[in-house]
Image (cartoon, rainbow over all chains, first blue to last red; front, top):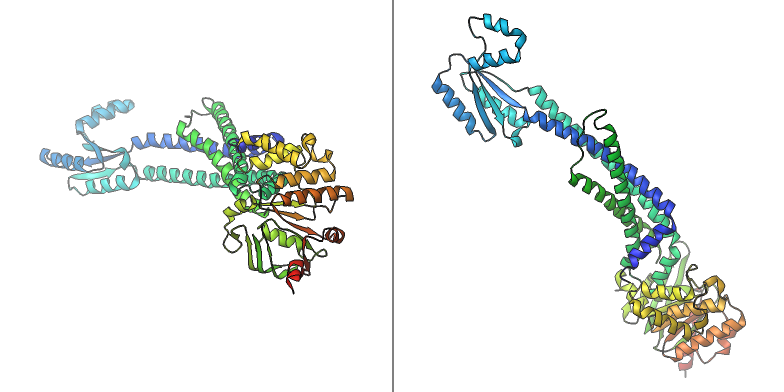
Length: 287
Length: 227
């Protein structure tokens, strides 16, 4: 009795292995599309984070700024909750850095009588504040100081990065939803066929007083197993695609274990949900 | 034990199947439910088995009322009400013993109980030697005996029989009816729908409830009570 549902679910899968395989493969392919997108989204996320780390605000200072004003500015900026560090780069350091980075202009820089490069304050934000709103807010605040000549932070870049991330998220959500619906329809059809194939047994169960839960359980389990197998198949396919692309076309990072575990479980849950919906519609017709 | 009170049943397409049906079947009683095809006999049995609800009126069965019963309580009721049909309704890919074991397993019986109970019931219906046979290897009479054993599996207080001899020859029919009488003699009430008037006449000591176009037109118990 205790393992009746498991026995019946496995027996049902054995009775129609082709159908079960077709179902699991369909779910696998649907989840594979979602998995592939997850790999793309994750790698875009990784790339964005790397770019984010380089997002900084540079405040160019007027040449006539006094040491006291610089100290006030530095101390104020460091006290902003969004700010991680505020590093002063003097005119001399700016020139040295320019000469190092632009080696081909070394002679031009050496011939200059006056250093044209301004001193600056390089401001790094804390990771949680590296978003367009915070960057803009801090930049605007710094720009209010009269001894600040100009503030640059790559506004277009910051906005584009965030647009890209939002777009990636939206596409993944829409595609994921569409393919989840496909998977639910496929599993639902399989379970409906299983219900029809076992209608005599279900009718007998009802006659002799089996509870609804008892009748449903094997079918739900069947959906869960099919979904989990589909989820594992999707995991294998996604890893196969990742391994084929990684290092040859582009360097990729594999998904974190939590993502893969959630993806596989999502297959099982999809199976369970599809079975539940199919049973709700079809099992009730057997009074 | 079974009481129908002013029961009406109407179907959206075919219209009124039962109109103002009332009768009471006492504990341990055996009654024939007769009438021509379409009179409403099967509908009465389905209402008692709570496969359907009355459109109006009330069906009371062994402490359950059609007015108050919840869906999750119906399985409990069905363990007190056995039912057999003309078309047997056995699972074809399971042996006689497996058909009975299935009925026990799906209602939560312990594994240790199943085998003994199945053998006892098969012996009770005279099929101990045929326990390993599949339905298609059994005669009609034998198949009906398996369904009777299945209906008795939870020791019901009443056995509903919907034309149980409809597909059987005379000899098999007699055997089945003798078995039903034995079950009744052991204390189980029986309500048997039949249009076999010869059978009803032969066993005139039992109560007869006659239906015609959805209404009770004759009840031998009430006729007896008339002075």
